[in-house]
Amino acid sequence: MNATEISFGMVMLLQISIGVAMNAFLLLFYTRMVSSNPKRSFSDLILAHLALANTIILLTLGVPETISIWGLRNFLGNVGCKVLIYLYRVARGLAICTTCLLSVFQAVTISPTTSWWAGVKARLPRYVLPSCTLALILNMLVDFDTTLFMTGPQNGSRVRMILDLKYCSKVIESVETALVISVVLSLRDLLFVGLMSLSSGYMVFVLHRHHGQVRHLRRPGHSQRAVPEVRVAKKVVALVAFYVLLYGRQSVTLSVLLNTRGHFPLLVSSHMVLSFTFSALSPFLVMHGDRRMRTFWRKGPPLSNVDDS
Image (spheres, rainbow, N blue to C red):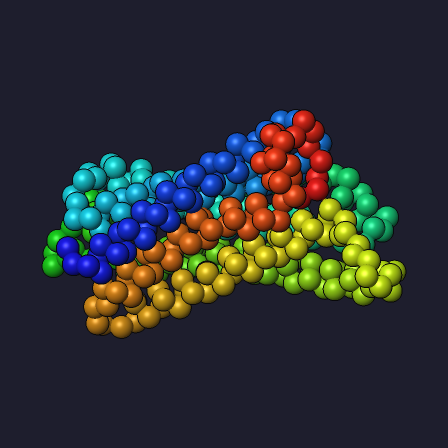
């Protein structure tokens, strides 16, 4: 093992450790918020699901990747690879869907109050849990191919390897099957990334208009605090922008790796480290935008759930 591999191993281990700890804290925090006041906590429920998905991503792919970097390769059998990578793929899809749900629901929340939107906003909380359940079922079905084609490490000279993770391999002999799977996964990702981008763009438009409307109400030297919905919307927009930026980086890197015949170990290692960046760092964006965190650290857990994030 050279110095570069040791450096990447240390960075990945640090990133996973911090990410798991912070996501576990957010999961417990927002679960408590939901249980204390279920009627006013649709965003807290979605954030709890996102924290759970991020935790599973870091554990199911981050830990094996770190172990493989430190030199251990064949530590998972066929069944272990199928289960572990399937859980990772489902969790990754849930992270995309959950971030999209959070963006769409928050866009509805801050939309102008009209007779039609008022009815939608009133019914919004009851749609959260069914939407999360539907997202779970969708991703379990879409990523089911993992249980069929994922195996332990294989000899690349004898089989067609679509994906080689050193400790696990995805083997698909049929080019047509591999193409269909790639198209389905790409369509799912593009659909939800597109939806979250559109809803975030709409929120930016609404926030810009809101800023123009309240600007003339501010007296010189007077700082007007934003209403809770505006603060939450800004947090969601930042979270979505962060995700879309990293998703674009991942897509470009994968395209380079798949379309070049050369072997670039440094690029591959950098790609794997950055693959966990959203799951590891998004909790800090969420905590920074939630004012209840300050109350939690200063006075302990709040007694009631006030949607003032």
